[in-house]
Image (cartoon, each protein chain N blue to C red):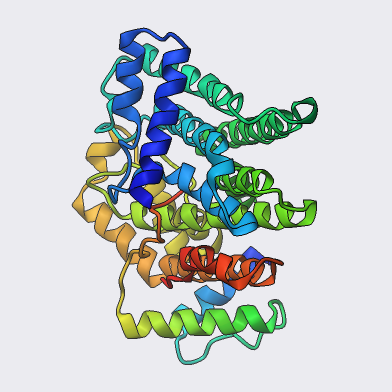
Length: 60
Length: 321
């Protein structure tokens, strides 16, 4: 997983919502699918700035 | 069932405290600290994670009880050390006593966790005791090193995303991995199954850290992560991704001079919130959380145990963000 490339693609996608760079070859297709889905869900749910809890509280 | 398990864990802890012949003051500190940081009211979460892994592997969880108690006591000790290091969570019991007392409490808990694994049944050459002891020691070593790197990161101007995730793997992933590995080992899992669940635990810890970092970053009333230069995921993302005017604006916010808490007022908080949302820091956190969630789910789906035994583990990571 290339954390930096994913960050660049997320940033580009958020800044240019209608002209994003998901076609980039720097990440694999699965990662691209996840990015698309998460960003799309984010639009639908509104700009919620938190992440929900995972069961059994948290570790970390 | 959960109530009975909680009672068994409580009884096991009480037995260890009694046999250790501790002072009434130390016992009182331990009892007030156990479960004090549970946000949901659920008890002994680290012990339950350990038991869940044992049950997943073997179908029963009783064999892992001493290991689960050891995990609970070690995790509490690490939590206390972490809060002292971060000067954080002022509402928790160990932050409301003198630091010297809290340090001794954490040291005592760490050694009590080894007392817990001495309750494991006698087997050939005490193999289980040595094996679980090694897993626990490895976690303490990795986690301590991660905590040190965390403190060092606070003083550095530049931290990359690779460095952030490597740190989180050590600091948070090692704890959850330890719980899963102890449970799987005491469940009699094969070497490859134990390794798979160890990896599952690492991902679980990374997910938790991402969640905490995102949720705490803009919680200016309760947390001081940003003004303390904590290199949380949104911070590291913005540090690395911003260019030009936005990078300058972010740098100015990180370099407030004088009394930082006073200088970082409503206007600055608003600016940081705007940058965080507009530049995709929360989006990135969600993407990374989801990628690690899927990786952990893949492991559970791939492990060679009856489907029925995977249900609790799947539920653990099924919840979407």
